[in-house]
Image (tube, rainbow over all chains, first blue to last red):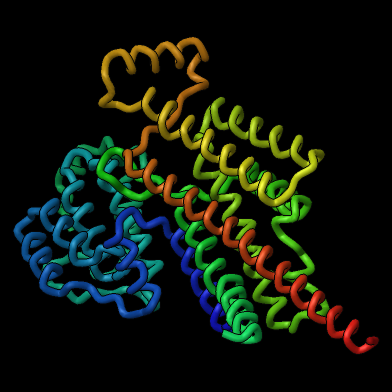
Length: 160
Length: 238
């Protein structure tokens, strides 16, 4: 009984520490977090594909919504890469970029880079940038202020 | 039922309480003590115990030992096996954090009220260190202490700041905030928070009552054993 008590107490204490560290906002989040911790977390492929179809139709917000449902724990590098890409494409402008969207994109691409165990390269013909590093550089350049911003020839540039 | 069987059952129940039930009860208090439910959308918010609650918990544990609620020798000592000692220590650690979280549950989260409540808790516990206490009296004192804090935080203060309260409540809340220059500001939570806190405190007090029960059972068992051995000794000398 003592061994059982000790083991149960330790397991329960670890669970409590984990809950306070991850701070899940709902039971669903707690369950997803538990799957991630157990290493059995998987992205919902059907929802990911639906998001990709919306992304290709330039419906970026709807695409992000689908990807949020496909990867609720935001733990899949590929999904996070596409989310970042959708922020880039939505925020890109011929005259000026939407800084807020670019910053969110930068946050997501950094997350994707952290999650990826090796350099993240995506072979999607629809994309002009195939690596997370490229996307990150583009988003960073978009948020920086320099004299190039007032160059009138900037309107000739193409969205990637 | 023979006396030996009764004694065996008694010690088995005490072990069940001490090594299994009490840690689970106290760890549940640790889990729920910092849980609040957001009034917008009902999202969970986990608030770790502030530093002051750890000080309060230490004082409370000290008071429990002084008041005889926790007989340290019965929990930890050379006479017990290392495993029993480890289990008892883990239960006492759980009790310490449960006490901290019980305070966390009834302390306002920020502002002047947080420090006012903390000060009153500190004052009460510090004063009690120098009073003569027994386990029963200590339990009654703790029930009153936590009960009062619960009513003040989750009923009085919460009703002053609830967003969908009547106009009179809102005026009172605004007046209180204005007079105190905004220092009496308190975050608003869903009513579920009050229910969770009530359940947490009930569980914590139940845990303490169970400790008192096990201590009394063990004392009566020891008394019974000593009286039996005395009778046997007397019979042998006669």
